[in-house]
Length: 236
Image 1 (cartoon, rainbow, N blue to C red):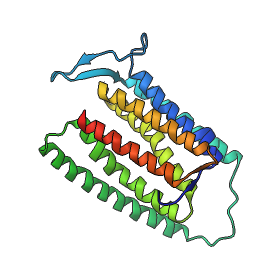
Image 2 (image 1 turned 120 degrees about the vertical axis):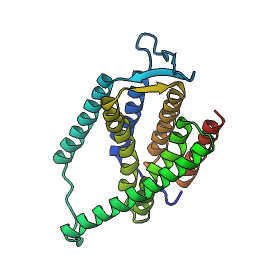
Image 3 (image 1 turned 90 degrees about the horizontal axis):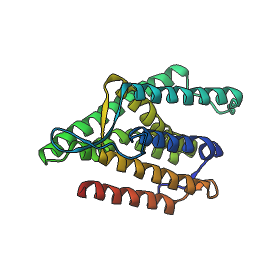
Image 4 (image 1 turned 180 degrees about the vertical axis):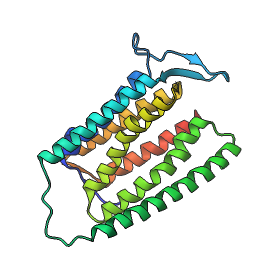
């Protein structure tokens, strides 16, 4: 919506499909492998559980993440990018700016998440709804800021890579580490959410394939879908 984005072929052919594949794999791992349907059980409070991310599954997801990282490094070494003649900032200054920026992003994100979570719990919101809305928005604020700044500066590859890379990182690394640390029960609502994630990712891929760009109308449609989905999550 801020500015039409040019989408490089590497995102269309590699990264966005891998992001979709990661979500699909996690979805399948949450289902009963014999029927590919939720294996319904129940929490003590009566809420339905569709499946579990066990330590073994968490480790498997982590291995997929390492495989993806190897692919990125291998292709980067195979096709190194030649820098142009523009003047670069000193290395120490770049490192300093990164550290300061990360610290400010983390502090700001934590403040938003914790404060909003307290308000949501006082309002009686469920953990799933808090995670889907307040925590998700709070932890995604750094990506939003980074992508908008990169877009305004014409660094569309950085803006798209930030979003797609974060999806893959969250799905494979964060979920994998969490599963290894402690098995995770997946409720039925989360299975529906994964289906929505896959659908919107496929839609983004379709948009990206049209002239290798994401225009303002397509951006608006994605934001509208998100608002509809949040309305559904609140209603649910």
